[in-house]
Length: 215
Image 1 (cartoon, helix red, strand yellow):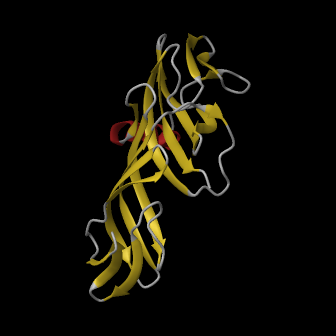
Image 2: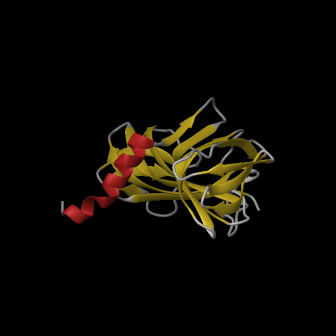
């Protein structure tokens, strides 16, 4: 395999190692992964009540729970709340940079979606709130990829076979599996995964999940 051909595999392995999505009970999905955000002056950190309101030599001025706080580069900017029905978000961030125009943060996000019942649906053009999270799964034969209606049907001579995909059902190492749908009435999922490994009774995939709240 050529060096540049390993890029997708490296991304997938990192996704599996650092983040993912897991079931918590039968109807709750939990997404964990890195996140970065850019917040223009005067705007809120998306989905939160934290607002970037000023900048000076002392640092970035942020309103948190109706109180003003001056934050320096490297300081924490955490938040936990419910931006929509059945959705809990936990942000653990650090300030990466700040200036009079914008605030930049990096960290992790944990998104818990309750009462999940996947159906195929169009992802909103302009969701009210969205996150992109690296995910990784090992799916047993006969089971669905979390948050989708795509099931792993097993190993064949043509590759890993899937049910619920559009058109050709076989995928080989490095091939993509995509899904767009609704997790619950107000939460949407748009995900593209790559096949990392597969056998008679399992398939391992990694990629990105875009989770959006209805506008």
